[in-house]
Image 1 (cartoon, rainbow, N blue to C red):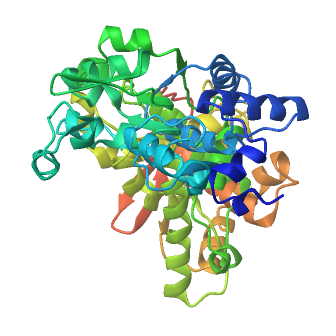
Image 2: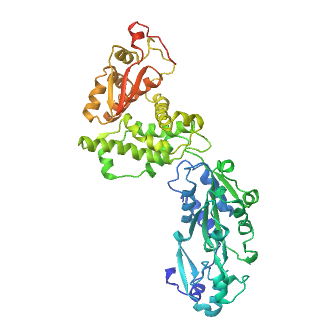
Image 3: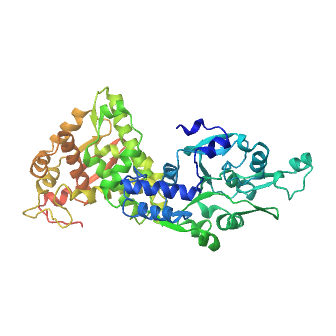
Length: 494
C-alpha cells in the first residue's frame, strides 16, 4: 500500500501505523542495516573502525551527540547522513506548526484540530530529507531564534494572556519537532543561550519569558565543536555537556591512501578536463603528503588543524594549472608536473593558521616549504634516501647527477613549457633517465618525467643542488661550483 494515499486520521489508524520517537526510528533502521551488513555512512573514509562504530553505538543508545574534532573532519557531513536512518515518510497533522504526529500530538493547535475533526483530521506526509535542521552558532543567536518568544501582536488580536501557548511564536527547535537538529560550532553559542537548552535536552520543557510550557519535543540533537574553541572563543558549559549522551572524537586520515579517496571523492570533477589533464599517482600522493606535512609543521598552529579541504581545493587548482598551460600552448593533452604545484600555493595559504614565526616567514613561503618537505618525505618511496649520502660516496646513486651540474650545467624550468620543451630539458640531463630506468623502470611515461623532476627538487631540498625561484619557474644549478671544481665532492651540508 502506498502510505502517501492515506489522507486523514481515520485511514491512518486503520493502516496499523504505530508512532515512534525519532530516536526509536533511528535505532530501528540502524538495527536493520547492521543485520544486513550495509552501511549508511558510505563515502566517509577512514572512520570505519573509529568514529562510525562510536556513532552507531550512540544511536543504538538513543543519545544526543556531540562531534568533537578539528576543522574539515566530516562532522557536519555525518550529521546530514543520519537522515538516511529515518523512515522515508512520516505523517503529520495538517495545519500544525510543530509537525505533530497524528497519533501523538503535542501542540495545542494540533490537539484542537483533532478534537474538532476527529478521524477526518487531514494529514500530510513528510519526507526524511525535510526532517533535518541546521543552525550555525554565532554570537548574535538569541533564545527567541532557537526556542521562541511571545508575539504581542498575536496576544492583542486574540485577546489572550502571554501565558497562553497560542501567543507564542516558536523558534527553530520546536519547529524541528520529529527531526534531526544540528548546532554547528556549539562553543560559539553564548553561555546564556546554552543554558536555555538544558530543559529541552533533559525534560522537554520550554520556558519563554518566564512562562513554563510543557512540550514533549521529539528531537535528535547533534552538536559539532572544535577543541580550539574551548580556549580561543568560548566553551561548552559543563551542565550542557553533561546532558549530551555521547561525545565522539573525529580525526584526520591516517594514511595517504585514505586521504586520496576523500580528495578524489570531494574534488570538483570535469569530464573534459579529465581527458586533457593526466594526474600521475605520484602527484596525487605528493598532494596528500603536503597536508600531512602541514599538520606537523612548526610554523602552523596544530590546534587549528589542517582541513581536508586543503587537498580538495589544491587538487582542483593543480589540474587547473595544467589546463591553463594547455590552453596557452594550444595543446590537446598534458600531464601534471611538479612545477605545477606552484599553482596550489593559493589553496594552502588560506587553509592554515600560522603561529607568530610562520607569520614572520610569510604564508606563501611556508606553503612553498611544505611542498619541499613533502618531496623529501615521499622520495624514499621511489628512490634511495638522501639523508646520509655524501657526494663522494662510492654507492651514491646521485653522484653522476650532482657532477653533471658541477660541470657548469644549469637548467631553467618554466611553468608554461610545452610538453616537448619540458621533456627535452629533462632528457638533456643525461644521468636522470638512467636513474629512472634503474629504480622506476615500470613507471609510465607520464610518471617518469614527474619522477625526474622530483629527484631534482629532492636534491635541492637536501642541499645538493641550488634551486632558485624565477618569475615564472625555477633554475637548477650547482650548489658550490668552486668546491666541486676543486675536487671536494665530500661536502655534506646536512
